[in-house]
Length: 171
Image 1 (cartoon, one colour):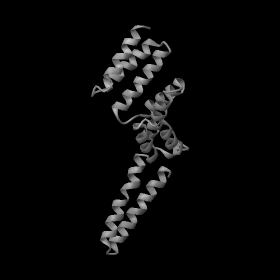
Image 2 (cartoon, helix red, strand yellow; image 1 turned 120 degrees about the vertical axis):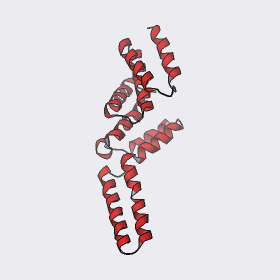
Image 3 (cartoon, helix red, strand yellow; image 1 turned 90 degrees about the vertical axis):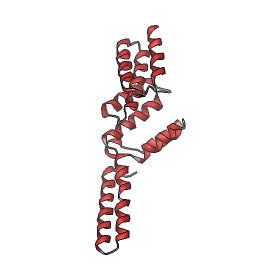
């Protein structure tokens, strides 16, 4: 994995080489190099290991996702702020199966760092509501469920939210 600064330097070098090729009358090579510089720029904003971990999670392969996330040794230097949020979000999803206390920390940090999509934010808040409910913090769980419902614009979490509300009535 490359540091985020190295990715930008690589993109800059590809653009410079592309311009040099165009000036040197090798227009095809120059255009190709400039287009090739889009790859490190894309990987600057979307980390390759986080993308691969999402693909593994899509197939419910938690061990494979953990393996890909383990390649990111120091998230503060290797990732931009939103990517750090998704790094913690993925860890929270994986830990929610086994350790709720650690999962809660990761979800809170993911929300603090920011997530791009409202659906991801709604899932994080729904999981935090579940943790709060298991710890008998009804007011906090109610607030988090309301926020998750507001963020769930497509209604994909409607069933889970209503199920949690029914469980909260029993507390």
